[in-house]
Amino acid sequence: MENTKDKTTVSRRKCKHITSSDRQIIEKLYRKGYSVAQIADLLGFHRSSIYRELHRGRVIHLNSQLEQYVTYSADRADDEARLRSSAHGPSLKIANDFALVSEFNHLILHHKLSLYAARQVILQRGMDVRVSLRTLYNYVHRFGFPILPHDLIHRPKKHSKKPVRKRLAHNNILAQSIEHRPEYINDRSELGHHEMDTVVGPPGSSHVLLVLTERKTRIEHILLMKDKTQQSVCKALNSLERYYGARFYELFKSITCDNGTEFLDAAGITTSCRRKDFARTQLFYAHPYCASERGSNENANRLIRRFLPKGTNLSSLTQKDLDHLAMWMNKYPRKLHDGSSAWQLSKVYSYHFNRISV
Image (cartoon, rainbow, N blue to C red; front, side, top):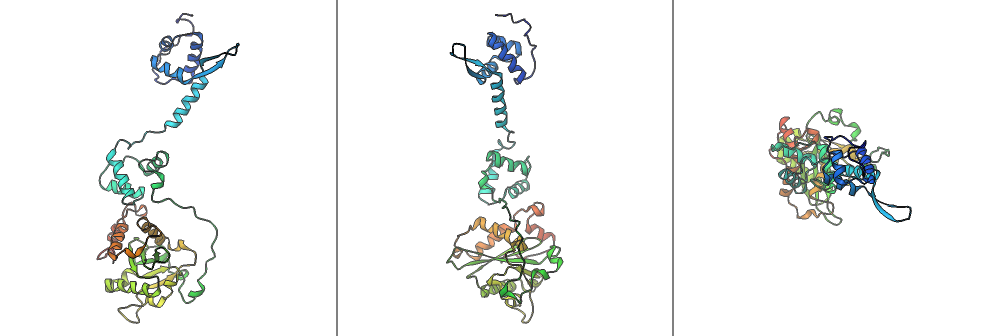
């Protein structure tokens, strides 16, 4: 065996990790018959590090007599090192903060908040999150932490870019089209303009929810109706007008809805039940098959479906249940309001409700 002080001697280094060049030297020394202790001393590593490295780079070769023998391959060890490095990934900055992880789980799984809304609530409570929203989403999709990807509340859908021909419904020729809606309503610069839609139960059930969404603040009203008829819609709006009294005309300046049969009684929807021959609101109809023209309303319906999934029988609900749901929605932290809720925004704009819902 050659003396350890020959030309192969390598000076000790402070590097803690075995590099590719180190592996080439290890392969050369190992095949010359150097012991693990000698290789460790030459390269400046602990013996256990060299033992592990020899194990990771083990390969089986055949000699000239076609007999198998085990040796060390620097190339094989390099491949193993790259695989370990790519699989390791970054450390989770909140992994050891059990209180924070538990709070995320509770808010998302039990309170049905999105990851953004949960983070906002936690920040408002004074807890130190320490990571950005994007990092949290990376944790979820890469590591299933603090929740699994399928537990995320909001998963954006891919929308078709197929053009839609905009026209009024044939059975609603007397309606006022959204095309005539003033720009100050379109750009959401003024308060008091709503979008209206219904949420239905399973086939064969009768009870329906009437949902009104204020376009600027996203304040929600959810009313329980016995059926999906024009009479029930007018009756629900009448109850809303009686509740707010004269303030109804300031709070509900206009309503935009789709061309559903339940909304085709334009006169019944717009005429006041308190003052005959007086228009309590303006009514605009969106184009058929253009749900994006009532985007705020559609988003509100998705929030409702977190608690009342499609197929839920609505007949067991009471108006008090819907008041609580509206309360939850109106206090929901929204990204478009920089983390504030619709309820907080309505107070900022002096848009006062006696209570959040009817």
